[in-house]
Length: 87
Image 1 (spheres, rainbow, N blue to C red):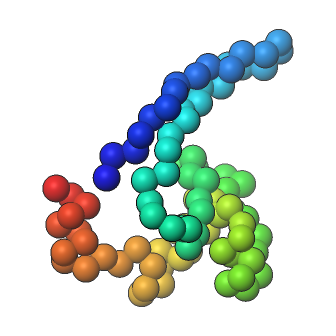
Image 2: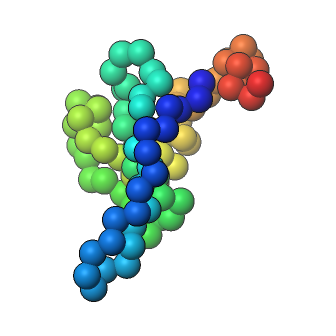
């Protein structure tokens, strides 16, 4: 499951540090259940959502992922799935 990369860009504007972007194609069939914007930080990295319906329509952040990961059903893969992901 490799992501198709369409382009790598650097956006430069006056008085703002350059921003590097990668444009990738979605490799999944269908609509994802949850969407995350992960930066690898926990400072100001939580989206305030109420209810499952709002969670599926929002872009969640790092702290949301950490909190969901504590549940028994989120990001728990079967042995076959783990094998396929790691190979």
